[in-house]
Image 1 (tube, helix red, strand yellow):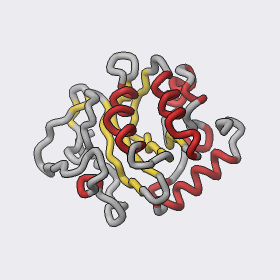
Image 2 (cartoon, rainbow, N blue to C red):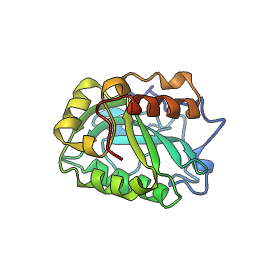
Image 3 (cartoon, one colour):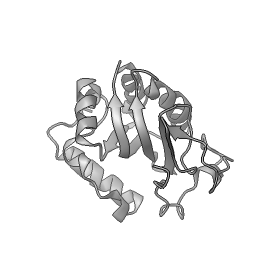
Image 4 (tube, rainbow, N blue to C red):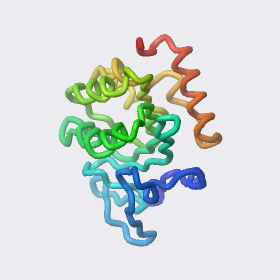
Length: 194
């Protein structure tokens, strides 16, 4: 896992550590010192620690004019033991909502497991953004992650699964990825009622 880096080709458009509005503003990174782990496995030092012991992320894009954020995740999303959704919501999402970000695309290619629990933080997140045309979408979840998310009933608050499990987002620019994701949601039978 230590050689899996956050996607870097969008750095021409946005760098969270240089954005005064970002929860990761002025964060400094090492290219050589590995300190963060998912269980016994070190992860690349470019991933951001937001308070979870098993889930790390990277804000790839925060576009305040369009209200959208792309956040790439790595590790194990564990709401059962660590309440990762609470940590993510309080330490990353809430500060972004305060900056008028209301569309969230979480890139979950590297989320290896999901252990669900209460879905109230997902409901709260959805309630915070739904009146402003908000969107919560988990892209490229593995099938077993999708199934566990469905068992936890977070599909009432976030879009995931189906054609969203196979989005080749690295081939495109952020606006094109948003268009692709919205097209999938609009053509899905599992879409949220807005």
